Amino acid sequence: MGQSREFVDYLVEQLAALGEITTSRLFGGIGLNYEGRMFAFVSKDTLYLKTDEVNRAEFEQAGLPRFRPNSTKREMPYFQAPAAAIDDRELLCLWARKGIDAAKRTAVKKSQR
Image (tube, rainbow, N blue to C red):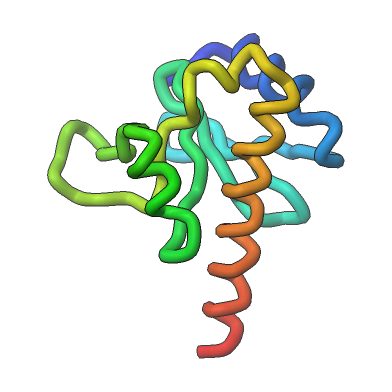
């Protein structure tokens, strides 16, 4: 398994203030979903948050690494959450909201195609 269930359950508990967070299996990881949209996922006990053209620069400026599957050069629109946010419920919710907003914007874009 690519991550521990305990870590995922801990994250869901930390994010409870945002509303109902559901999980789904995802290519060896676990997706975190809000209102049916995946805004984050966990792989190897690391939380990655969704980005788009609106919020990507903020993640880059914070020096957060981008997720790359299997050490490939393929770029995915997910960046690692700040380590300090994992144990700080308020900070984690703030960063997770950025992922939720990106997931919503992406869904709107897809529906307009």
